[in-house]
Image 1 (tube, rainbow, N blue to C red):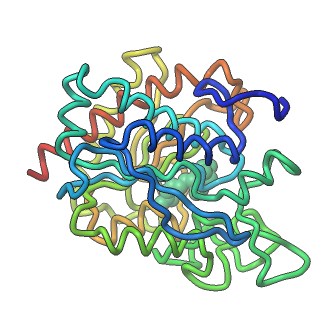
Image 2 (image 1 turned 30 degrees about the vertical axis):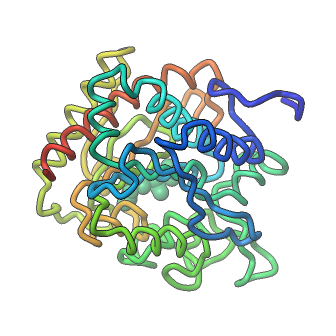
Length: 310
Ligand code: 0X9
Ligand code: ZN
């Protein structure tokens, strides 16, 4: 993999190519896409969200974060795929046309940009951001432990040298703060929060930090089940579904639980392919089928959410 490789939806793209792509696609489809800057990373890089939808001031929206964990490269690949497919099928596919006519998608293609770059240049297995305010000896906060949802409790470490270091305080990290501030300022429109990760093939919903059931547990479970069936209908891949705490493991400070507690009633985490054969090093040949199957799930969920929040 070298710097002469050009941008492709079926390859893993370096950050500078994804960044250029956000500008290019917004310029190419100004009626459907706007690029917003929601903040800056620890290393001062601008964080971009693509707003995708026909009406710029839509009353309904879905927020999707990709790349909160640096090494989960299939996640940013899916956010890029989603935007491409949305504009490609708008006006052709009934479901997508209805979605984009009636709601906005806020797509954050890479939440943890500094970490993503580090995973390309220095350590392919890097998970956290690159913040070093708390320690000279160890770098990085796990941004999916840094949200203000039972912060610093289950599966969160106060030791900066661990993979699940939750930071000195909730929202201590500029990346977390930028996302949380954006969500807070769009709470009247955002109906759903999707957080895209890998790997293990799961569809998770609140809570992660407690075994208690969420108030609308049954609806979330039913929607996750239908999404899982939609995924399996394409290539037969099995995605488990259930609450985070019971299905993957209990953990605190995650973006999905925080968003849910802000009143966003539809909050899901997707763990994409595979189940461990390649793990984070999913071959590029699996980008397309993975994105295709997850696209079905996201469209199904979005349609349900649109009809239920009319
Ligand atoms: O541990 C995580 O942050 C996620 N898994 S990963 O292997 N991609 O790191 C799962 C988060 C699930 N959501 C909650 N626990 N709230
Ligand atoms: Zn992850």
